[in-house]
Length: 229
Image (cartoon, rainbow, N blue to C red; front, side, top):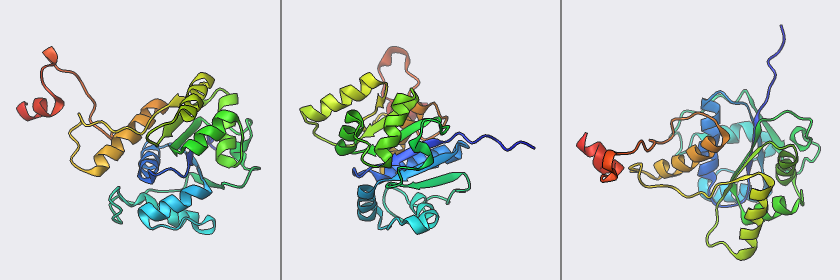
C-alpha cells in the first residue's frame, strides 16, 4: 500500500491582533479534510495570551492548539468541539531548516492570518527573518497561492506600498474586514465571515457564512429578505 501523499496548507500566525481569525481558518481547513502545517510567530504568542489566556508552548503545542481551537471569539472555553489534530504539523518560528522553508517541500499554499504590518513588510522586502516570512517568500517564488489577511488600521503609505508589492508578486491581499449583510448576531459570526473569505481565496469549501445570492430588483437587504421569506 502506498501512503497518501501529504500536501498541506501552511498557516502562518503573526503578531497582529486577531487570533480568533486564525482559529476559525484552522477549524475550517480541518473540517474540509485539509492537512495543515502551522507556524506561530514569537510575537503572536503574546497576542494569543492576551486574547485567549493561552500560553502557546513548543513542547506542548498539540495540547495548546486543541485548547485554542476549542475557544470562540468571546474567549469562552469549549465553545467548539476540539478537532482531530492527526494531520497537523507544527514548526517552530525559529526553525529555518523546517520542511516548508524549502521550495521542494510540497504544499498547496500559505495563509497568513492575521498578518501584521511588520510581517507584511518582511515578506514584501524578502527579509525572511523567521520561518513565517521565509515560507511566505518561498510560496511567492514557487508561484503558489499566498493569502495575506492583513489586520491593521489605519494604514500608512509605506504599508500600502508593501501591500501593492505583494499584490504584484502574486499574493492575495485580504484585509480582515467583516461584512454585516450576513445578519451577524455574535462576534463569532463576524470572525467566521473573514475566515470564510480567506478559505474562499484558497479555494477551500466551507460553510462559515451565509452567501449573498442577490434579490430581484435589489430593493431588499439580506435581513429584510430573510424576514419576509
